[in-house]
Amino acid sequence: MTLDERSPARQPMVWGGAAAPHGLGATFNTMIRMPRRAAAVLVATAMAIAACTGSGGDRTADKKLITTPYELLDGGTSTLTTLAGQPVLVNFFAKWCAPCVAEMPALEQLHQEYADRVTFIGFSTQESPEDARALIALTKVSYPIARDPDGQLSLAFGAIGMPFTALLRSDGSIAARHTGALTADSLRDMIDKAFF
Picture (cartoon, one colour):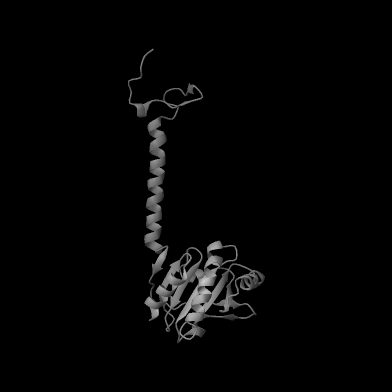
């Protein structure tokens, strides 16, 4: 029996007692190197996207006023410009999004706490009016809910996932935004930092 004096990393991989002919089969080195390269590319891509979009966490935004129309649950359309002159919390959610549904009690709690100082509005994103009404009945939220049926309003905010929450200054510009579920404490902190 002769020993293969090549590096262990260069020895052919053996499956079921048979190895592929030299040069045709995978080696241990290539089996390890390829996932590392793929992982490196994946990490670099994710970092680039995060740098460009600011995904996750609190973000401050530009002074852009968002005028994209949305649908009211009882019919008709409106824009956020109708709420100018007061701080506004905007929350995008969907009935199928478990973190969205889980954060709604915290939103309702803060809506009650800040009722005289901050206007809350929720947007059912890419869902039917019936789905939005069903979620309102389930969660018992009392703040207004509207629809973003084609997702254009959430895109105007730069939302990359749900739940997505944005705080608008009284001039309509974005003070802060956050992707992901918020607790009552983290939401309170976000509101206080942005407005008070």
